[in-house]
Image 1 (cartoon, rainbow, N blue to C red):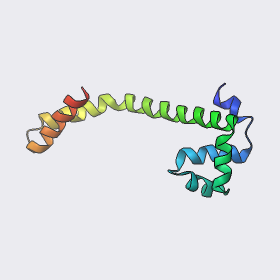
Image 2 (image 1 turned 30 degrees about the vertical axis):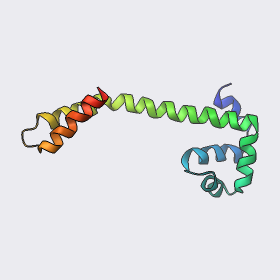
Image 3 (image 1 turned 45 degrees about the horizontal axis):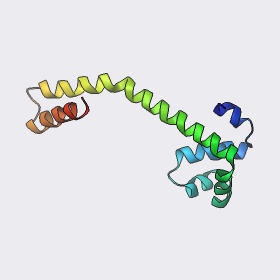
Length: 105
């Protein structure tokens, strides 16, 4: 089931909680942002529908992040090549650029 279909079954507070869980580093901080008790979010996470919606939302966020990374890889490589070829760059910068290219190439 797609996230949009799952989200239709959530309350507005649960939908807000999923967004907060994606944005905040801890369940406690997400609960504070939503204005509910931490225990409430933990109970929602035990609910199969809520946890599936949260899992789908996390997957979408991750896929979007990976797409952005893939989009900018050519620019990153060009930058590293420019640093390696720059006669005015320090040896440390050149080695760092070369190491990054070898590590990820």
